[in-house]
Structures are given as structure tokens and as C-alpha cells.
Image (tube, rainbow, N blue to C red; front, side):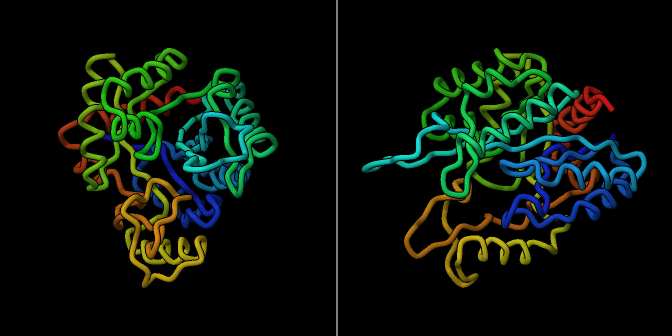
Length: 289
């Protein structure tokens, strides 16, 4: 069985990703993967390098994507009282030239119209306008459907899930990640039920931010540079909100599981749901060369 990484952050996820594009391709090719995706946070800065590197690693298809920051209103820049700029993650992959152009448009408008602080933001208005040619997933713990499950309950999460499903149809996938986190276990149980109820296919992914497990400490140092903190400062409880502040604590990942895992590692991790591994190939097949 072949697994393909469809959720990957490179060094172009600025001060958040620590994966070398060349090393990512090298590991993918050595492992027999058919494709690998680039899904950096809020930008497509690494796309030209990513596609160029594919030519040096024949047999590994490059998939261009982006993990956007989605907010209720991209134009809003003033927050008062207990308000905050609540951003949710959302992953899109381009199936074809139209999808690529729509990724570019949303990325550009995220900066032109939605930039707040260091975050380029989009909203559902842009998703409705520029969704054609794109594949979407339920993404990670920081995304709208998982966060709605955790904070508002299953009924509200169903409505959110249905909004995305109505737009993307067969190009909407339930993305399962297993980083040994309790919140993830809770979310995954609900997502598996949604998969049955709505007949939506499941894909496995790992929220890859560095190439090997041994790179976790270097990645943690990178996050400290990002936030101006020291490694000795205790970690925050919630690592899904990268803009949050918690007195006396720093933003950090929960463990060292956020790396570019091999097919054997992913197959073992999802041995109870083998179709989640195999379905990554369905997405690869949807991507036009």
C-alpha cells in the first residue's frame, strides 16, 4: 500500500515550518511515494522551488496547495473588549490550472484585503467565489469543523461540515491525524461518524512541519525565535491557536510527532482504517500533471 503526504509545511511556512523541500522529496522518493503536497501557512512562496525540485526527483508528483487562515470577516481589523481575531486553518489542494489560479487569488487577497498583524486571512466569501478546481479537507485540529466539535458540540459541527460538503462535494475529504492528543481522539471519533453518515471518504495525514523526528528540537527553537520566547518557558496547553498568549507560557507543539513519516509508520498508525491510507492515492489521481 502506498501513502502520500498531503499536508506538509516547508521552510516557507515562515518561522513555523522547518522542512527542506529537497529533503522532503528525497525521503518521499526513497519511500516509494507517488506524490507530495506543499501546504504552507497562508502563502505560496515556496511553490516555484517546490515544482522545480520535483524535476530532480522523477516519479514524485508535486501537488500545490495552501493551508489558509480563515476568519469570519477578512476586512475586520479592529477588536474591542473580549474580542479576538479568531483564525481557523483550512487546507486546499489544486486539482488543475483553474484550482491553481484560485489558490493564487485567495493567497493574494489574503494579503491585500485580509492582512492583520502577520496573518494573511481569507473568509467564506472568498471560498465561495474561488473554490472551483480545488480539493478541500476537514484539515487539522485548528480548523473550523474540529474546533466546532470541541467548543460547540456535534450538532453545530454538522452544520459547519455540511457547509463545506455542499460546496466541494466529492472533492471534500475527512482528514484524520493521529499525533497522540486527547482532543484529536475526541474529534476523530466524531469525524468517523460523519464519514459514515455523509458517505465522505477519509484520508490519513500527518501535520508535517519537519522531515525527521530528530528535527523536533530544532523546530521548537524556530518557534521560540518566532515568538521571542526561551525554550525553558513552559508550553501552552493549546498549541492550535498560534497567535494566542498565555501568561508565563509559550506557543509550542505538543510532542515530536509532527514530522514527515514513512509509509510504514503511517500504515501502522492507521492499521484499523487502511482505506485512509489508500484514499490518498485517489487524491493524487485527481491532480492533473
